[in-house]
Image (cartoon, rainbow, N blue to C red; front, side, top):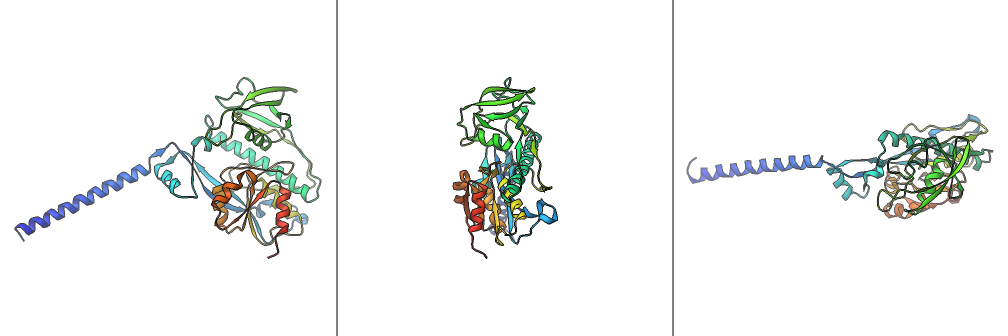
Length: 347
């Protein structure tokens, strides 16, 4: 074929090839752009894990139950790619956060992981003690305070606190565990100066330290130190442990740990055969403290079919705003959680 028709067909083929090449280049550029790192972090729903199999008790004290208590986790990462950033903008299950919220400034991932593990360990011990007490066992537990492991550059605690100091009081209130200190600091105004009672070389001294401002708008102030619980005076009536091989750390499963320990020790099942999820720190007095990433935890709880989500008071509004199939219950103390579960009709 020759003439104008052949030339027109060749021109069309050239146009199509050029268009295809252009589209391929655009696709490759888009893919490359999606992999470019941004200065952001991301919180995503993690997993929901049944806590019952984690509890270790002597057989004569253990009671089985039909339902399940679930702890829920959040996957946090920083930095994130442009593609992940875009996903965070369009998906209600994801939340873009400042990178400092994932790993604070001047803190290595290894240091953060160590602190998270220490908080998890403290949370487990506190949950066991409170769960035993609820079940009627003598389980006096007294934390020995919070030990300073490191001081973050830029902290006002530099040249005031020393590594090895043990914080035993803040603003006149006792500090026994890392959870106590974290909750007390989180409750302070952003520009507050706190009054610490510290044990150093066998003596108690009083110190005043201005807090570091929040890393992000709406965040909480920081003391700017790496910490661990200085130990416990604790003698349980029989061995109890919580084996958490699949979670990396943090104190946010304290409430669910406590309820599961308690439910394992009593004859009447609190779950009523239901799937109950929840979150919240636990303090020695049974009070429940706030946590981070509650929206992502709601999605994780709904994914396993949990019907109720036990939620700290301060996190309730955020939890309710994304809940679709799960009912969120506001909880201030572990006893309030027990009373609510006992009020549910049998299934």
